Image (cartoon, rainbow, N blue to C red; front, side, top):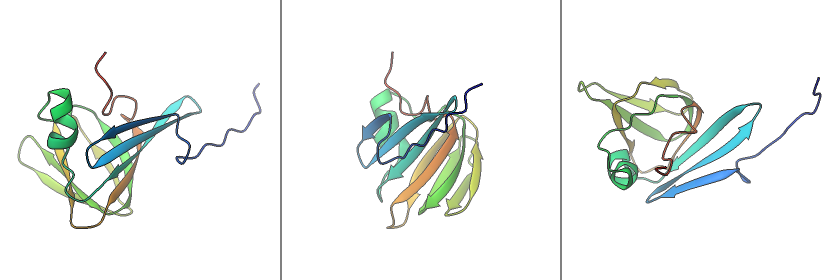
Length: 121
C-alpha cells in the first residue's frame, strides 16, 4: 500500500497548452489529469483554440468549477448558458464558449482535461 501524499500546484504544472488569449495548465495526480483554464477577455474557443485544431466546435466533455470571471457555453442546439464564479458545471461535447465581460476567466476541469486543446497526434 502506497502511503505517499502528493502535493502539486498549478504554478508548476506538468504541462501547459498555450493559445492566443489563454492557456490550459495540467497537473497529474492520483491517476487524474486536472486542468486549469485561464482566458483573457475576448477569448472565444472557436477562434482561439478550435481554429488551430481545424474545428468549429469543442467535442470534449467537461466537468469543472469556475474560479473567477464569467463565460458562456453555447450548445449546437442554440442553448446558451452563462457560468460565473462558484458554479460547478457539466458541458457535453458539441459546444463553443467565450469569456463574458472585461474580467479574466479561470476554471478548473476535472474531466476532459487530458483531451482539451491537445496537439493532434
